Image (cartoon, rainbow, N blue to C red; front, side, top):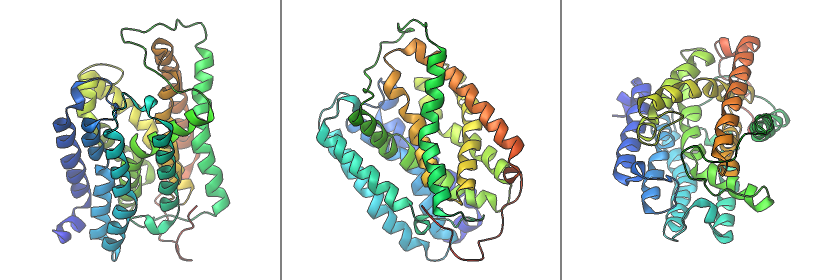
Length: 341
């Protein structure tokens, strides 16, 4: 089995990812109800499915690189088991939504978020070695800060551009939102990092599969490959909950949305020497945006459309002007391990 995975790393990664996620999502029952993020036991089962890309990355890394099996077990024990334990505890508390989670649980998620970033800040917790060049810590920190702040600033600009839009709902009931206060910001960041997809997805898609694909493709081509499968991975959710459009239309919108996002995620990872912190922060920042504006769904939909246009322009610009996306990466860093955050 280990030899087969090493020889068919892409197939193995996808089989493990889809083989864990889809059955858990379907079995949990969360796909047939709204809101999907209500933190109960059904949500918890579905959340285990969200961790599947990271688990697949650990499995592939353990098989394709020497000495990674122990590292995978250590990462599982240090990060994913504590995240699952805290998630299970939250799921049994009876909160009606993540917005209603109390301060104690919020600070628990905040502590977990700090721990997650600390664990992934060093290259030793990367399951597959980065095939490109390294960068210094200051440069990585600047890019990480940009990944955290820029999505919110772009969406704020899009929000301002929709001033005058009616605040009424367009066919759906307004949802509760967090306040733009320190505790609200902390809660949104911590929840979306640990349980909004970042922790489950980025160590898999960008942490393990991207560097494997970059051994055979340019970063841009690797991004497009990941984009297709990353979007398809959401299919059970998009077919039942919709994504911009309902039914099959949601699959199409997801593909169109994921393509520029995947390019940007690869770009920030490339620019920071393979660090996982920038894609983790970028993913978290994008996913946290609805937490503050979903009580005005009609305006949110218009602002989101403008925001997507911003991302498309940015993805097109970096593809056009950053030649590193179109070149094969350098050989392994000759001076030693790439510098982490």
